[in-house]
Length: 168
Image (cartoon, rainbow, N blue to C red):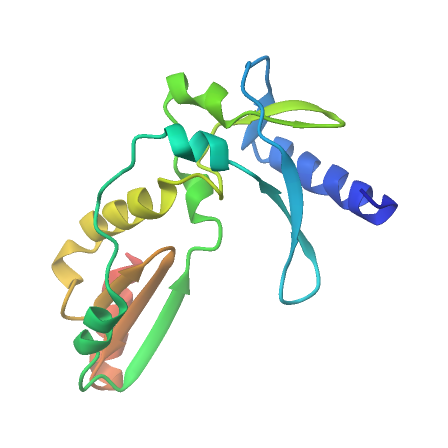
């Protein structure tokens, strides 16, 4: 890694530790780490869980089809998007599965206590949870897609009510 990447790795690692998302590990598991460039030019720490994902029992909760979602928006004129930016980090991992999330870097061996990007099941798990939370609003004023919530309405007055309900 380049010196600038090493500096960024330390910063992101410390942030994950400070937030309580990871802890030091003694797990026999250990996925490699790499950086992905974001649209804004910054870099994001990514763990390559491909080998773990091959062994993972998949959560078969259905992901929504884009064409079905667009059909729901017929007649809607007002929209609000709620981006659950670190949504996966809000979901704890079962104690017995924590060691499987381990990753190794030059600064140590760590494991996630919360769901991490790159694992196969967080999208379906999060959608399932959000569909339970927004059950009464689905198909009428809310769409859940991966880690985004779209509140939609035919007019502003209704939209304010829908948005208030969604945010409670």
